[in-house]
Amino acid sequence: MVIHCTAKSQFSMNPDQSLTERQLLTQFLEVLRELPEVRAELDHFDPIGGKSDRGYDAQIDLNIAGKSFILVIEAKKTVYPRDVHQVLWQFKEVNKHRSNGQGKERLPLLVAESISPGAKELLREEHVGYFDSGGSFYLSAPGTYLYIDKPPPKTLAKSVRSLFTGRRAQVLHTLLVRHKEWFGVKDLAQQAMVSPATASEVLTELDRFDWMVARGQGPSKERNLREPASLLDAWVKQLATIRPLNLRRYYVPGIKPDVLLSRIAEAFDKHEAEYAVSYEAAAQRYAPFLSSVSQVRARLLLNSKAEAAIADLGARAVNEGANLVIIEAKLSGELLFRERVGDIWLASPVQVYLDLLRGEGRAKEMAEHLRKERIGF
Image (cartoon, rainbow, N blue to C red; front, top):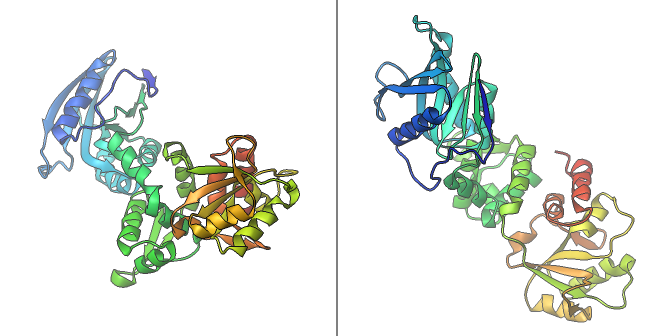
C-alpha cells in the first residue's frame, strides 16, 4: 500500500495551536483512521516523564490492508537535526527487537509539534516514521509506504525565518564569509557588529540544525560552521519570505555604461558616503559573466553625505529607465565585509549572490556562476 500526498493533502492541522503530547497523538490517530484500509488503536500512553521501563511514550496497534504492526511512539515538542541523533538512539533497542512474538512488526515513529525539514530528511534516511502538527506524515514498513508532505507549522517557519533577517542575518553573514575560522561568542559578536546575546542566540539555533562544530568548554568554547553550503542553501530558500528591499531608482545622465560604475564610486568616495556595489555590477568584477552591465545597484548608508553624492552625480529620480538603483541602508552592519576591488567598494560575494537571486533576467545564472567561481561552497 502506497500513499504519497503533497502539501495539498486533505489531512490538515492547525499550525498556530500549541499542542500537548496527548493532543498530538489524538490528531495522529485521526489522520491514520481517515486513511483507506487502516485501523489504529492507542494501546497505551505515558504522560511526560512517565516512560516507566518501556523507553518510549506510547504504543499504537496498527492494521493496514490486513497487515498488523505496532507503532512505538516517541513524543517531542520541536525536533531539529541535532535532536534526531538522540531519537535514533532511543529507538535503537526497538529496532533490534522488532518482533514481539505475536507476528507483528514493531515500527519506531516520532510525533512532534514541529519537525524541521532537515530532521525529516534524516528520519526518512533511517526509515524512522514521523508526524507533526502541520500534518506531515511518513511511515515505511514491509508492503506499506505512507508519505504526506506539508509545509512546516507556522511556529517553526517563523522561528527559522527570523534567523535570516536583521541583526541575526549579520551573524550568519559573518559565519559564511569567515567559515574557515573558529569563533567565541564575543569575537563573533564583535565581527558581526551585534550584541553577544544575539550572537549566542544564533549559534544556539544553528547548533540545532547540526551545522556547527564546537571545541573547548565554558568561556573558552569556540565554534566553527562546518556546513556553510547548507546554511547558504537555507538562506536562499528564505529569500521569498523576506521583506523586499527598499529601493530608490535614479537616472545619471551623460555617462556611458562602461564608465558609469567608476563615476558613481568616485562621487561616493568624494563625499565620504559609505556604500557597497552589489548585483550584476559587483558580480562582474568578482567573476565576469556578462558582456556588459548597464545598471549599477549599490547599498548606500543614507545620510547627508549620501544625498550630496547623489546630487553631485546629477542623478534624477525615475520610475523607469534607471541606471543607478540605491538600496537603502540604515546601519553600517548592512555593509559588512564589503571589499575594495580597485577603486570601488563591492558587497561581499555572499551578499552579491543572495542579491542576484532576487534579481531579474540572467541574474540567477550569474549568481550560480559567482557561487562556483568565487564563493566555492
